[in-house]
Image (cartoon, rainbow, N blue to C red; front, top):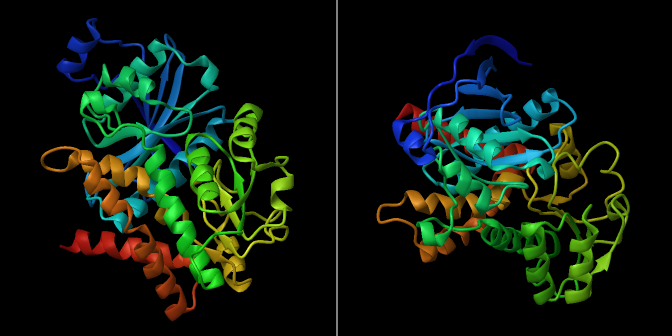
Length: 377
């Protein structure tokens, strides 16, 4: 999938970054350019001093700088990490296109367990981000919090989603959850003829910051919720606070449900699970929900309403994108734009209906049309 085309010397951060760090530039980092068809730039960094091993993927900047979150995960291999960051960055291009953020698509991943987080690691990651000279702008994603980004910010200005006190938009998780909540109700309207979710059984897979926020909204609106997560404390907290049902990690695919809400890792709708799901709609936070395009076709044939991931989960990136607005961040503007997510989903479903194609294909087609129109213009 990728070929090494050369090892660059450390592409040095801006002089401003060195002033923030208060120390001379690190020359031990090795940055490798990877040649990937269809991607503008993919780079890998290894820094022996901090232990950083990371990849940044810039998919497309036709619509603007490539904005996308930074994820930290204990990938089994670099190939697995590369596959993830490529899919995620492509999804970010399409997400920003359909959400009309005026931004392109990129993503970064740090290989490693979050338990190894350190100041040195995130300072090195900041220098890595800065090496792309603004082509890629980072933000929060899985296992990365605002405090981590604040450390990254000490080495590069190309960071969004910082705290309100720093002039940023803050934690994007509640905004992502709000957009998914609205999109899930729209999916229920399509699947059941009503957006009222009172009594609807929703199975939520993954209750991190965004998944938990979604659960709270679902319960408040009358849904009957089942949850699972590898973190048992998070699950128990939701059981205690909201009376949700806790189920096992594998059991979640078999529970009696109306809606499946995947809110953790991707590829959870696959050959092993698609026949087990008893839902009429799939609408969640997770990126790259479908393991393969064929699974979108199978859902279409089964008449399961699928809300394409990068359309329904755009709330966080929409919120962050408002930081680029003239005059700076305005929460009211962000919320208004997030409330358009159901409209975007209905546009995708209309394409699916008229062209008789899976909604996953319809979303790709719509996003590609938006990018191509801008490229031509």
